[in-house]
Image (cartoon, rainbow, N blue to C red):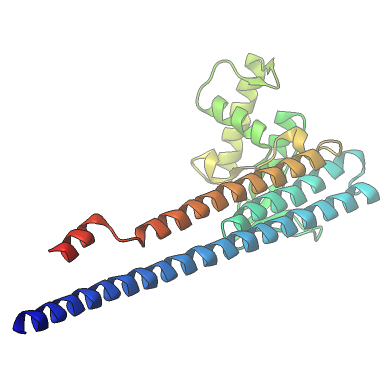
Length: 258
């Protein structure tokens, strides 16, 4: 009789232990799944915000083109401003971050406000003329140039002897003049490094042209969609792993068997 009572108590103990483990696994799974679902909602929300920001930039750019703001040449700059803000802020939105670039659009000396920094954008075809515009603004004003132009400036300042832009090699005189101009601007601002005032756009020079900007924004939208797909695949894998981790493992089985 005593053995029967002992076995009954033992079996009840095992049953309680198994139930406890099952409940813990279910709770852990529920917590994990909720976290994944929350993350999934944020991914979609961030994607929607990024898309809205890009669409807003596109609308402003279309307005610039339709109204021919800036004429034949100045329009390039207006397009660059709205595209810069749209692309940078959309990328940040996809990461759940707040916008950081604001188009001032007030006919003032600065084109953009990035964080607390006032930025003047210059998109000129001629590199030396583009740089020379820096002398027309205050010492505190930071200058933003096309990404492909800044890459040229950086190579020159690093001491490169041969530099190309769009497949064309710059002459020794061009390289020397550009280096001198950058040094002169840096000195006029009371700074020791050109990196303190020169900023790179996310756009290349040709990106901001009327006939290419829509393709640039379309490509940015495609990049956003691809990143979202990758993220959703990662979350799907997390779900599978969470379910797998919620199943009884060999160690638990051995404990119960003993």
